[in-house]
Length: 383
Image (cartoon, rainbow, N blue to C red; front, side, top):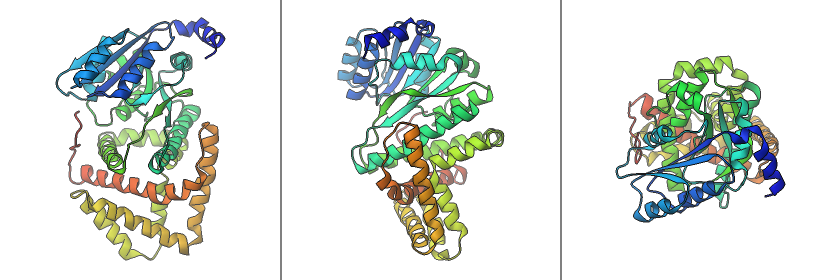
C-alpha cells in the first residue's frame, strides 16, 4: 500500500469519524481469528472492533483475548446472530457501524477509509463481495455473486434505496440504526433491516471501491444446508412483509424487477417453460416432487432433475429457449466487466440450466414449507 495514498485518505475530514466494526460468530474458527487480526491492524485512526462469540472453542477464546485493541464478548450458550449483533451494538460508540460475518477476509489496507468516504452522504451501504473460486461449485457461486453485486449496484445507481443487503458485509450509520430500532428477531436479519431502512427512506449506496472475500460452502451438502436456510428465511421475510415488498416494487419496478431477474434468472426460464405446451406429465411430476420435498428432503434432487429435463427438452426443440441463454451470457459478461469481476463464459449454460434450477427448486420448496405447511423451523440456527 502506498504511504502517500494512506496519507491522502487519512487527511480527509471523513477519516476522523469513529467506526465500529462488529463481528458475530458461532464457535469461531481460524478464519475468524485471521479476520479479527486483519481488522485490528487496519491503519484507520479511529476505530473499535467488537467480536461476540457464542460457545467458542477454548483455543479460539484464548487467541481472541490476546489480540490487542479488540473487545471480546464470550457467551457460553448460543443465543443467535441477531442477539450477538444487538449485544455488540449496545457496546459500540462509532458514528458508522460496519458489520462483517466471521468467515469473510479483507485484503485492502484502506478498507475502512474507503467505506467511510463512500458512506459520507448515505445511511446504509452494501459492500462488494468476491467469492474465492477454485472448484466448480465455487465458480457457480462466484457467477451468482456477480449478479448480486450488480443488482445492488443497480439499486444504488438508479434508486438510492434498497430492500435487501447481503449481511456478510454492509455498513450503516448509527443514527439510521437507532431510527429503526437495531435488529429484530429474524432468520434473514439482513433483508429485514434493509426493508425497515427502506421504509424510513434511508439513502442507500453500493460500495464497490473495496470488497471482502467470501468463502463458498465447501461441498454440495453444506451448500444445500445454507440454501435451505436462505429459502426458509426469505419465505418468512416475504410472508411478514408482503405488502411492503409489493409497495417497494410498485415504486421502483425499473430497479427491483431487473434486480430480481439478475439474481434469479431461472425464475424467468421456468415461467417460460411452464407457459409452453407439451411435457405436461413432466411438469406435473415436478410439482409433485417439489411438494413432497417439503416433507422429505430427498425428493428435492428429483424435482431439480425433472426441471432440468424440461428445460433441456425445450432447449433442443424450441429455438426460443436459446434466447435466454444468449441474453443472460451477454448481460452477465457486461455486468462482470462493470463490476470488475471475472467472467466464466464457458460455465454460463451450466449455471443457467442446472445450478440455477437446483437453487430455484430449493427456494420454491422453502416457500411451500413456510406458506402452505406453516413450518418455520430452521436446522442448526437460533433466532
